[in-house]
Each structure stands twice: as structure tokens, then as C-alpha cells.
Length: 355
Image (cartoon, rainbow, N blue to C red):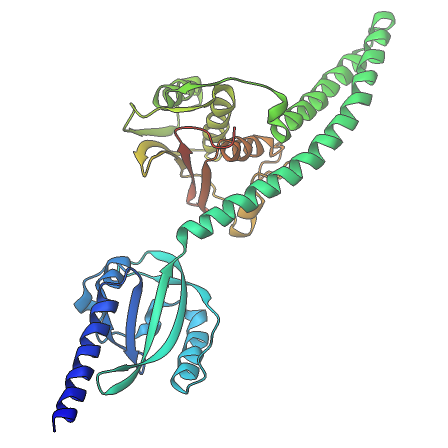
């Protein structure tokens, strides 16, 4: 009799210890049977941004995107049958407040009370995904920059020679076509010079200085006063005491290019919104417009030299922006909806990384 009581007591103690371990775990832990949530720990409720009681009884598949539900259902069935998948998978889940977040997850069977259940563990991989994207963007920009700089250098040299001979011809012949040719040739050389500058900004040495981003944004907007007659301007500027350090001229050119693109995306009328605030040790700058927007399948091409949605654009403006932000260790995300507008969100470290 004593052995039975001791066995029961040991089992109860083990269950209490198990429940305490998962309750105080920093990872999101969900226990469910037949897809019905029986338990979620406090870390999970915090991560999914809802009260614990709201998750109990809900279908665990509702956290996942529609096109992924069958795959998740299959993994749960395998785990219940004892064929537990060993590999972690990455998914996007929907939180209680409707926001999306990238997670890494795995499922395995557990005994929950008297029932066999599935324990699903979610790990937030947002930071890792952002870091991977930033590294991929840097590698892409570096590769593009090396190719572009080589081509620009090789093309610029003969064009400069042609320009010299054209000036000699002008001395003996004042034909108007020669002036047109020289003007067009200057445009071509300027374009190549800009390409060299954005593909290899380190060729143009500039000192790292303190930059008052609030002041500079206001100054740049003032330069566009004559183009804002049909655009509603909204400035939401906070935390102006938080300055950044970097190559000032490159930063100013980047801000100029973004504001210029935003205004040009609203040919008739619209709203330009510029935000500045400090959060998570980063200076945030958001430049939003209500313009034509960018097609979803074209967003990944932004920053590529000579890709532009404008008929007369070269794409070098955004290439310069991406290059400058990446070279300073910052991040930039783009959200856009066709016909509704675009938002460029810059996250800038106060001190440049890797310079």
C-alpha cells in the first residue's frame, strides 16, 4: 500500500514539476488534442499577444496561414502516431491582434493528465530572419556594385575621349548638332559617375560626423516647397535629441532621393508623411506617400541599378539609398500597395557599423 501511495505521489510531483517547467519556459508552448488547445504557457500568451483564456479551446491550426494548414495537420498526425518528425520548420503565424510573425516550430507527443496530446513549441526567429535578409542584401549590393563599377569604368573612359574630340570639333565648327551631342554625352557621363559613386561609395572618402536627422529632414523638405502645392505634408518628428553618426553627404543624398521619389509618385495630388522617432536603440525614419505604389513582384528589384518604375528613371537613386543604409549598418524595409502608396522604413544605428 505504501509503495502505491509513493508511486502516486511521485507521479503527482512529476506532473507538477513538468507543468512548472513549461509554464515558466521562455519559449511558446501549446498543448493540444485533435487540434483543440488545452494549454498555453504565459510566454506563449505574451508572444501571441492575447490573454491565456482566449486561446483555450481554439483550433491550433488557425494560427497558421491557409496554404500551410494541411502540412501542419500532417505533422501533428505523424507525431500522434509515433512517427515524430525530427526537423524544425519555419512558418509565419498570426497573433491574436492580427499581426504576423516568423517562427521556428516542432511538435512532439506528451502525456497531459490522462490524455495523449501534442506539444507544439514556437520560437521567435524575427531577428534571425532580419539579419539573414540584411546579409543577403549586402552580398547582393556588393556583387552588383563590383560588376557595375567595372562596367562604368570601362565605358566612361572612351566616352571621356569622345567628349574631348567633340570639343575640338566645336572649335572649328559651330553646328548646333555638336552642342546637342555634347549635352547628351554629358548626361551619359554623369550617369556613369553616379553609378560609380553608388556602387563603390568607399572610393569617395568622407569623415564620420554627427548628424541631426530632424534638422536635415526639415531642410530637405524645404527644397521641395515648389513641388508641394498639390501634396499634403505631414511631419511627425519626435526624439530629435537622438542624433546619428555617419557620412553626412551620403545620408542627405539618401533622404533627398526618398523624398523626391515619394513626391514624384503622386503626379496629381496626395499625402507625404515623414516620421522620426527613437526606439530599440535605433533612429527610425519613415517616408510614406499615397502614390501609385509598387507591384508586389517588383519589390525585390528595388535597389538594382537601372531598374525604375519611372519612364525616365535610372534606378540609381534607390541604389544609392540601399547602399548608404547598408554600409552604415542600418536596415530598410519597403511596404507598398499598388494604387495606395509606399512606405520606406529606415532603422539607423546611432553609430555606424563596420566603417
